[in-house]
Amino acid sequence: MKLRLTSPSDLIDLGTIKDLSGIKLSGNAVEIGAMTRHAEVAASPEVKKAIPSLAAMAALIGDRQVRHMGTIGGSLANSDPAADYPAAVLALNATVTTNRRKIEADKYFKGLYETALEPGELITAVAFQIPKRGAYMKFRNPASRFALVGVYVADFGSGNVRVGITGAGASAFRQSEMEKALSSKFAPEAVASIKVKPDGLNNDLHASPEYRAHLITIMAKRAVEQALK
Image (tube, rainbow, N blue to C red; front, side):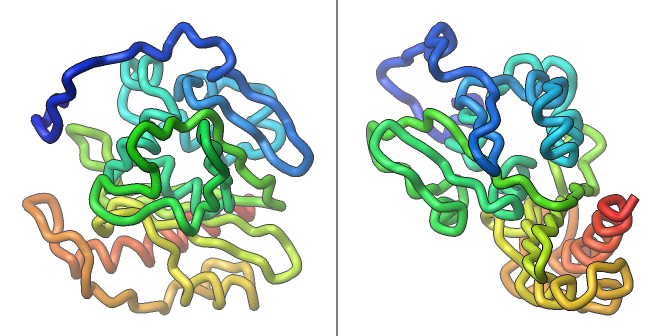
């Protein structure tokens, strides 16, 4: 609305619906209610214990005001191409639950501000799979704090590694070449020499596709280093 991309006729405040907020462990996943604030995720003892990299990522979102007002459901429904949560959804193989169905991470993001959500469909919760280890690193715009490039690396063990990228393209995506390399050897040097192709990456006043491609490799290497600490 602020960007004048939409002009709805009605607005409904979901903030007082208690069932849409909260954090809980559910099997091998952390389930977060759609109206849970970023600051709550960052400070949650449950998230810090189960997926510390997710709590650390939430602490990097925007500024203090944004973290205390913005919600995980709002972020994912909006699906800004430079938002942080999309990278976590893909890397942590999350399931987006709505009032109608459950949507797998790999089927959720469709394009620029476009998701699998249908008209009238609301996100109610997001369940993140708990990895063996993981980390998120981003090169942020110093003014907006959005990611020029953000990389979330998650190692689930047994050669199962997922890498989620945000800020680089029209929507978040996985980096299969890095996933394959890290599945064989989870180490910074496994991704350090990977040359990401700039084809299809964002080109704007902040960074060229070539620069973003370079940043993906740099942020991936730093994320792996952080995950190993």
